[in-house]
Length: 112
Image (cartoon, rainbow, N blue to C red; front, top):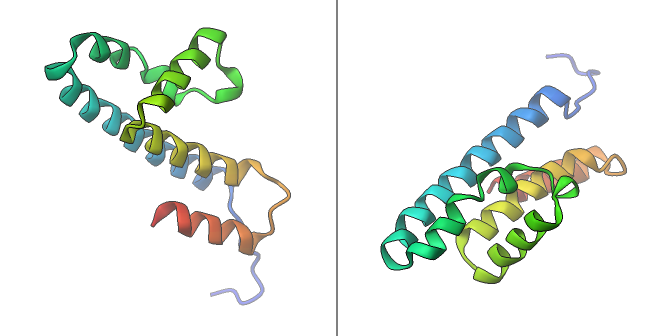
């Protein structure tokens, strides 16, 4: 161990965390689609076309994609919660004003 080493959240590990969150989000989307398609085929079609909008950074959404996200939010399904977690983890790394201890606390909350 290096007692004087600086501990940081580096871009490599931040990307790895974001990739894990994105994979979990896509798994949630697929599971929800499988449930919905048996009950409401039209809703399933809409959900099936949301993979890339869910993975895309919200600041890059088109108007149509923003409308899709609003519909997902209104649905109140698990997919919206998974999306919020993904974005929360991404936001921790993007917020350069956070101190290290604040970042660690937020990461622990997001992962648990």
